[in-house]
Image (tube, rainbow, N blue to C red; front, top):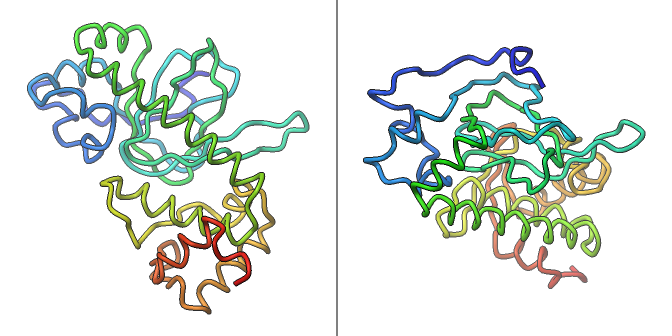
Length: 248
């Protein structure tokens, strides 16, 4: 893919004060494996970009030549079906590191669903950096393991859970992904459309809207804004997601 077609905006070329110094996602991304004193080396191999909404920056099947670290905004990950339709397989936000493919080509596509900032690292240059910083390689391995666990959870979500359990699981995962500090969270943003949520959960738009409306009417969630929700009764949602309220 030709990145000239994406029309990115270069955020910085100043390596005396690196973009890594001010990155809000640094503490929750793989970059946290690099000590502050060594940030200049990391920043020197990164290409910092801003992409507008609806920009595809990873295309399934293309040569996997780069890694991408999301530092702001949200992207959807998807695969193309033989008939041209998309199947959304996940959403990635600040701190997510994309492109950890073992093959020579990308196994999925990635598209921004709102303005996004990211860092692009070429594979050869990042591998060279890992040689100097073994902790970075360890963190990348942990990230790859987390991706496998997420894929297994998605299979369970689509294969065994009811519609209400799927939506509850999704809301909980989005809340915790926004604040990956280990403590249960109660607020989340939903920058994606209802259609994108439905695609990811293997449901219809009508079903997703109906379940969310029921959660709201029953006082389990509260709509703070168009794209923001508070989990008013997180414990109830956790029980539902775990399959403990099938008769409720």
